Length: 87
Image (cartoon, rainbow, N blue to C red; front, side, top):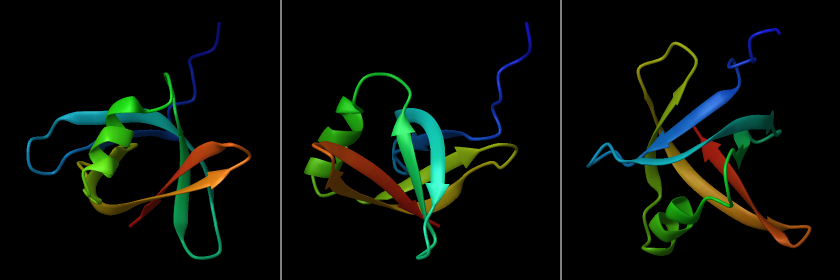
């Protein structure tokens, strides 16, 4: 069985506490440079809570990087929440 492709795996952390907020897969990059991702498990309940508290700054780990500061954004699409990261 082949190893899973982890090149598109994204981990989103709270920059202050280093708490893991979500793990997911990067889906696409749009024309504005936003990186769209979907949560690997559930609907990102902890990420939704974090966003609902007005928090927008996160740290993203993807591939070999140690962490990139990013801005968290969201929109509703097809009846569900779509998450986006700007870095």
